[in-house]
Length: 309
Ligand code: HEC
Ligand code: HEC
Image 1: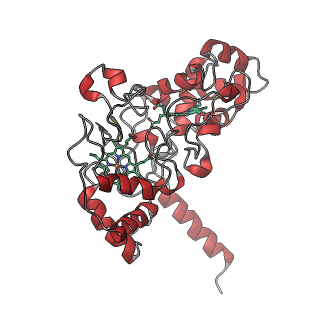
Image 2: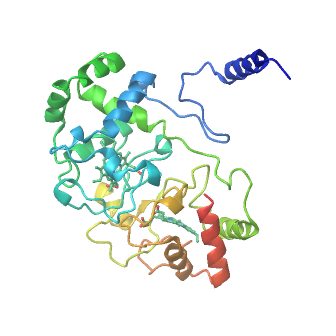
C-alpha cells in the first residue's frame, strides 16, 4: 500500500498543473472560446460572490418578494418552467424566461437583442413594472443602508453604488458556463444518433456552434401576425424584422419548458412537430423552415437527441 503522502503529493501536482496563469473563472469546457470580460469588470472571488448573493436576494424588488433567481431558477438551467414568470404583485410580462447558462458568450441580450451588455441588462428587471418595479437610485440607497452590502461592495469594487451592483451581477452571470453534455462527450444512444443526423440536416444551420445557436435574429413563422410582440422589429423599427427573435441555445433544453419567446409550445414534441409542419408562412419566415416530411419515428429520434443536450 502506498503512503498517504504519495496521494497528497499527487493531488498537489494535479492542482498546480490545473492552475492557469489566468484569473479564476476563465477555465472553459473543451471547444469553448475564452470568455471576454469588460476591462472594468475582471472577475475576482469577491465580485462573483457578491453578484451571486445579490442574484438570489429579494432585496432587489420594490416589495422585497422577488429575486433574479425567482425567474431564473438554478434547477431549470437558470430559466423557469412557467409560461410567463410572474413579477411583483403577480404581474405578467409577455416573454418566457430564458436560460442564463453561457449567457457570457452572447453578443447582445434580451430575445430581441435590445440590450448591449450584461451590466446594462441588470437595469431592465429592476425598472420593469412586471418584474421588480423599483428604480436603481432607491435600490442603491436600500443597499447602502444594509448591514453587510456596503462593505462587500467596497471590498469588490472600491465603491458601493450602482456601478458595483450592476458589475457584480454581471460578473456572477459570466461564471454560469456549462459544457460536456452527452452529445459533446460522444455518448449518444442509437436513437439519439439518428436524431443527431436529422438535427444536422434540418436544424443545425441555425442552432450551430458550441452553444447550439448562431445568435442571429430570425422568424420561424410561429404566427402570421406577431402582436403585440413583434420581436426584433421593436428595437430596429424595421418591418422586415417583425417576428424575428434570437435563435435560442438548445443546451439543457429538456429542463426549460415551455418553449419559444412566448412559451406557447409546451413540450419538445410540440416544437419538433411545429418545425416538421414548416411554420405558418409569415412574411419574414426563414426559408429553412419548411415542411420536412419527418415520420413519427424521426420526430421521436429528434426529441431524444434534444434531450441529450
Ligand atoms: C419576473 C421574472 C424575471 C425576473 C425577476 C428577472 N428576469 Fe431576467 N429575464 C426574464 C425574461 C422574461 C427575460 C426575457 C426578456 C426579453 O427578451 O425582453 C429575461 C432576460 C434576461 C437576460 C437576457 C438573456 C438573453 O437570453 O438575452 C438576462 C441576462 C437576465 N434576464 C438576467 C436577470 C437578472 C440579473 C435579474 C435580476 C436583477 C433578472 N434577470 C430578473 C425574466 C425575469
Ligand atoms: C431558420 C433557423 C432555424 C431552424 C432551421 C430551426 N430553428 Fe429552432 N429556433 C429558431 C428560432 C429563431 C427560435 C426562437 C423562435 C421564437 O422564440 O419565436 C427557435 C426555437 C427553437 C426551440 C425552442 C427553444 C426554447 O428555449 O424556447 C427549439 C427546441 C428548437 N428551436 C429546436 C429546433 C429543431 C429541433 C429544429 C430542426 C427540426 C430547429 N429548431 C430548426 C431558429 C431555427
